[in-house]
Figure 1 (cartoon, rainbow, N blue to C red):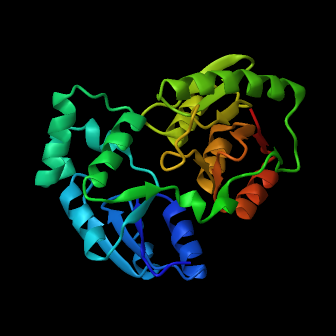
Figure 2: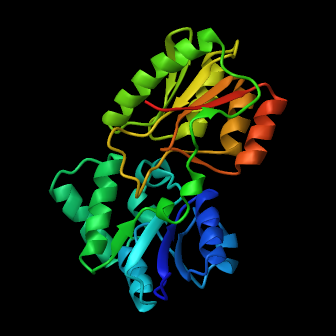
Length: 281
C-alpha cells in the first residue's frame, strides 16, 4: 500500500470502471484522465480526481498527471482507432495540442506505421520523457483474467473444438502481425478476421456472411503480449454480439484475457446455449 496516487488513462468500456472500483476497495487513490468520447462519465464519481482530455492532447494529459503527483500510470479501456485515424479532417477530430502535434509529426517523419503496438510503445516513450511510467492495470486486479476451463454448461462439440484449434492458429498469426486478435471460423473456413474495426464488429460481419450461424469466435493474446495495453477483453457485449450473429462458441486464451461481468455474462450465454471456453496454448 502506498499514499502515492496511481494514474488511470481511461478509454471506452467496463474495464476502467472495474479498475477504479478495485482501487477504491483497497484504499488506493486514483487520478483519472478520461479520453473524450471514449471514457464513461461514471468514472468521475469513482476516483479521487478526474480530468477530461482529448486523444491528441498529450501535453494536457501529462500535465494533469504531474499536477497530482502521479508517477505511475495504467491504461484501461478501448480507443476506437478507426474513429480518429480514418475520417475526413482527422487532425481536427484529434484536436491536438502542441505536444500532440509534435508527437504525430515525429512519428510521420520516422515513417512509423500505425499498428497498435507501434503507436502504444511510442506513446509510452513520450510519457517517459516526463518521468511517467506505465504498469499493467492487471497488477492490481489479476482476478479479471479468466482461468482455464469450460465456463458454461454447454461444452464445445468435437467439430467446434476442431474449429477452435484451426482458428487459434490463424488468430495467433494475425496477432503476430499486429492486425487483430479475433477470428470467426466455421467448418475449417475463416469467415471474418478482426482488424481496425474491433471484435464486436468483426462478429457482426461474420453473422452477415454466415447466415446459417453456428460459427466459432476465437480471441487470443498476441505472441509476447504486452500486458500494459491492448489485453484481449470479453464480456456481456461480446456474448450479445455472438447471440445476434447466431454464433455458438467463444474461445479465449486463459490467463491472458480479461473477462468482465463474468457471472452475468456466463448466465446470458447459458440461456442461449452459447459455449464459452478458456484454453491454454
